[in-house]
Amino acid sequence: MPVRDLTAGDFAAYASMSSGAFGGSYDPTAPGAPRDFSPGQTPLGIDASSVPGGLDGVLAAGARIRHDRVALGGGVVGCGGIAGLAVHPAHRGDGLFGQLLTAVIARCDAEGLPLSMLYPSNPAIYRRFGYQVVARTESLIVPLVDLQRLRPVPDRRLVPVTEQTMPRLRELYHRLSAHENAMLRREAPLFEEGLPGGGWSALLLEDLSGTAHGYVSWTRLDGGDGVGLEVHEVLGRTRADRIALLRSLGSWSTVTENVRVRLRPEDPLLDALPGGGARPDPGPVPLVMMRVVDTVGALRARPAPPSLTGAVRLVVEDSTVPPGTCRAAGTFVVSAADGRIEAAPEEGEDRVLLGTIRLDIHAASLLLVGGRSLADARRLDLTATADPAAETFLDALLAGPRPGVLDAF
Image (cartoon, rainbow, N blue to C red; front, side, top):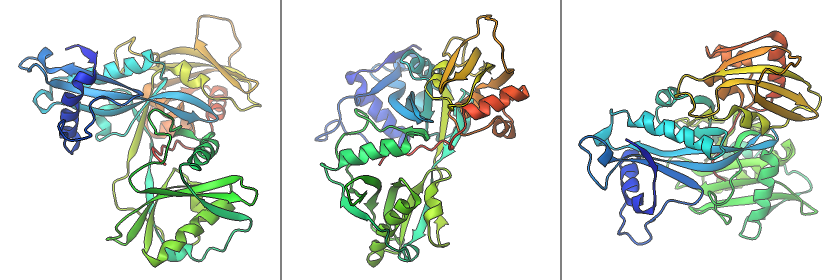
């Protein structure tokens, strides 16, 4: 049951299987129906003909690897976003899921993607292959009557986001998310350069000199449940900027009662909300799982705190995939100096080390994305042991905001 690259000739078979698994339909005869996989992705699959009882021209399993990049504490790292992993109903229970996902992890490594990320429909299945829940995306229902109380912020004005001003919004997004952990860079070809479709709208917040300070983006809803706006992001440089953007949402009170606002973990927007009427959205909470594919690559991608110096031995154990699948497991020397992280497999060199840290793949996947401590990993009953000085060093090295993944403007 070999895993192979899929081509344009396989697209209809893959799209049919994927739509059957995740909902929707695919009609290759419909005008404008896609005929090929999108750029910036690596599609993989298993032919049904290689499975006992399988038919020619049918895919038994398939998946797509998105070549994303994510922010990592001031650095940027390649990340294989796993999308549309599906097994044909006729071939479920034959072990194809594990075979395909193992091949996906190996391909991420081969294509220079030190991390892998996905939104799981069944977290337990992906956990068997080393993926760990690192974040969740939450939404609040915010009454507009609360936002109407906000006072104007001096020296700020709102500008419509158009094809001409969208590049300014993208540049500002990159600035505001640069020191986050796991935020997608949202770059071409996976993200179109122009305005998002589907009724998306946005406003830029700028000062009187024209410098952009924040933005708010939304999609108008029918408001049948009292929620008339889906607010995708409210990002600002300062608390005052976030207040100004929230105040702009209050102007919608003439047509709707509430807005649904998407939040990052520990979102600073929470500190700008003026009232206590907000409530959690009752819908499902999307989870984000990530996996380390290349430990050295993930560490080298982020800068070190400028004042941090020292070196530790890091042991990462991974029994979830066959040895040699990727470069997550091993014994490494990790050092920090002059704002840089160096990491390499230990080769017996004589160095003064602060101590040894031992992580299983789940602890490594949780910690190397940033924003967590070894104590956090131990609370989850993950293997995360360390000599005291080494633990202090690694916690300082990986400190920062909790990972937050928002996948669109």
